[in-house]
Image (cartoon, rainbow, N blue to C red; front, side, top):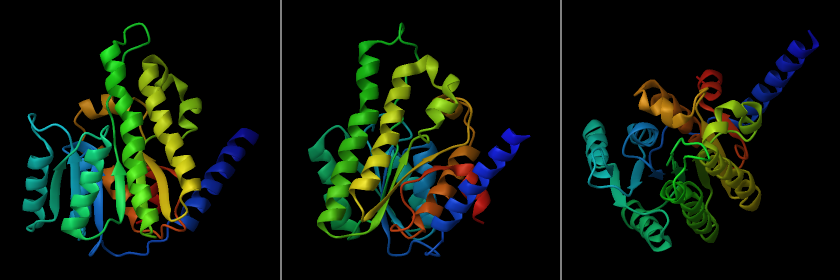
Length: 269
């Protein structure tokens, strides 16, 4: 009985914390501009689609152009939905600082400002330690290095211009790695990359007081790449709705949190 009551108390504390920070100060995103990294399909695409549907301009960032969908087909689809040129695709290898700076410069030249960034690097090889090849390890390092480099450039730009804004990193809450370790054990290196992304959010939020830094993660019990393979359209839509709710908050109040999409979508209507 005590354990049950304790769980309820923890849940209520979490809800109260959410409600105190998630006051919606925007009705839409008219006049706001965002960069979404990792956006040709799935979660990134859905976030970009929801932002533009609510009036925002979005820069879609990706590396692959030979496969479909890619950032160009995604931007065309979004612009067709909103019936105006709200989406701009820009090629970028997020491991390359000069290409990241090009994305920021292009966004400023075309859209005039930057109000927020979504970082979703989800390169995953779900192999155990004995089966992981060096090239797979190298590719997954993008989750760490690319996220860090793009976040670094964005945060530096926001600080240099004394701008307030939002940074959302698609990564799990830190306690998730310890409370639900069975989900993370058998693909240990992928787990380490996602944990690093969560740590970036925690410490960037302390380092940069002018930008709201939070993580957002779906309510799932299997690795995200496996869930995405199922082609469930509802997960990207739920993540997009939750991301937009974060972007509608005051960045000086809503920061330093590890959000689950289910909680946001059920607490804020």
